[in-house]
Length: 144
Image (cartoon, rainbow, N blue to C red; front, side, top):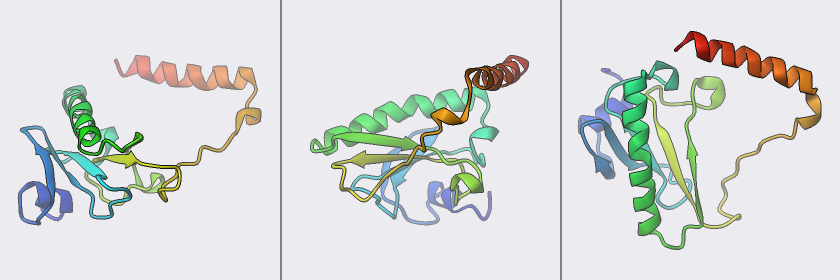
């Protein structure tokens, strides 16, 4: 895509700090470096977000994630964990509309990065959860 910053990075029109590249993905350091080693993994095929993946592309891209994550872990033995985040659509904090997965190494609880999952356990009764699950399961079956 002509105006996509990640496509420009993949095509070497904008410099990056490459971590890994093959025929399917390009992985490079995020310029924000939330933590040391924060890496983005992007498919070379321009897709806007996870909703644009087909099964083959998803399989190919996500099959490469463990290899890159393990490399980060070996590079930084002091790492104590890793968050894998994929934001899809603006409301879910996607800011570059070329699909990408963030691999964010974690070194301590004080590393200025957090994810907050609100506790809404009391907001839904069991029958409501059953209905939600059934609604989603129906859509999964229809998309097979």
